[in-house]
Image 1 (cartoon, rainbow, N blue to C red):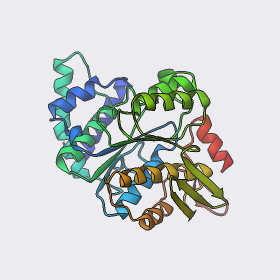
Image 2: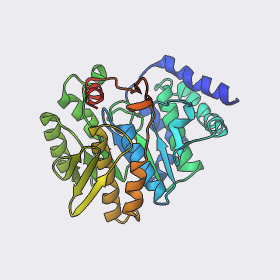
Image 3: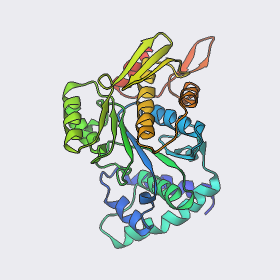
Length: 323
């Protein structure tokens, strides 16, 4: 199969729709030797803000000299963006090789088990774990969740840290109709004894998550409680524990981006304090300030003013209108 054949085969999985659950992922990964067990992964979930938070983390780690794999969705310009190395999409040849390895396993599962056919997202997620866990090892892999957490294809590895960027009313047909329902699903990102950084505004959801983190004995760091963002027009000051970082000026627009960056900074400090990374704070801030993310309140023309944004639920539309 060439590159276009490989893409066609992946996209053809779309006709099988969304199938919540991780059984198919677990079966395929077992057949592939459990590559997901070989990564140092950061799991990022949330209704909005996942992609930007991933971008801030990736930029700061790369600037500090680390090899970083990322898994994001959807793609904007090229499919290969979904699996990226140090911010650059993998090559067409990598996609062809990964499909050649995963396709027989998927077909074996369909023919020999009751699990049926893997979905497109399951195939891509498996490809990512195989690439970073067995073919091209990296220092860290930042994994953006797809739909929810509990039954999401990405929820099959043991992360070193987890981040929940927000809780909003999206995909309510699958995740539940209330903030608490969605918090119970997305709260599954919290793993026992694993640091958890989060930003949640709604009281019921916040109460559930803080209590669940305590039950899991997961060190939890909450925005607006443990983490402070003091906004000053185009800049902000970040405070956490004894750390205070002033005059941070992000390229990305919006108050919500200051919060996303604060979550990323906190995650990096927690990893730094745990001895998992060496961190030059100046390099971290410089890298985050320069981050841009296509389709996130992106100004593409000045006269007339033209902005594109991927807002697709109430919370993200509120953020767009406010900005």
